[in-house]
Image (cartoon, rainbow, N blue to C red; front, side, top):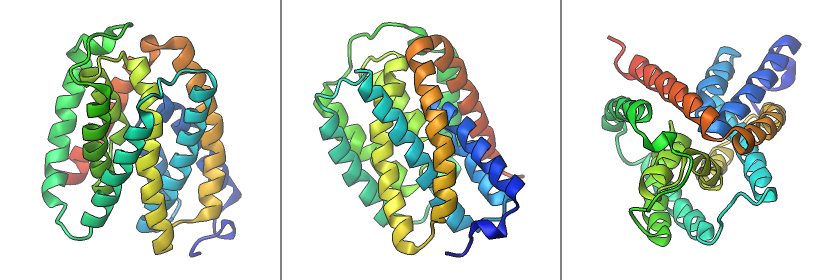
Length: 259
């Protein structure tokens, strides 16, 4: 392990814990918590690859907590969820393998454009305002198979915004409202992240102590966030989702179109 707590000031450790707590709330509501935690790890001096691995570990702990809370409250329609988890795993493994074989430059340039379109859709679409589900555009088994492979692949290959993309997929293709989309995205996004955690662990690029500390913050954040999802629904999730998408889009444009 290249970095242990003795290399960090106590104040920095407390800040990272608090950042993870806030990120856990945001991630449970709309995805995008990594917008806070990854830069915080880098600013704290964690090397980039280890920051990525540690970030996936602490985020996975938060997602697991949120998914468990939703399951306890009976919020999951889990009939086809195992199918989604299976194909998301296949997609994520494929993406993780191919990330070492294929250039990512084109995707890095296209992703900000995709995020701009998603942001505009989030602002102007009536789909994210509705409180009740509508007719689905595809069957649940087909959705779990196709989106599991596609979004799982994207998560393994690149990753930014995966949770938010899952939410939109549920809203657009399965006719869910944004509250349902936020809830059902959790176990599927968690699946893809666990594949990534396994890879980073194999490469030795996870600071387990720091990841578990921030994961504790994520647990508290996910508990708060899951309560807000169930109690506030679309009234809170939609504005948070839009803010997350705007922030993520701005970050990606700054990274890949700096000029």
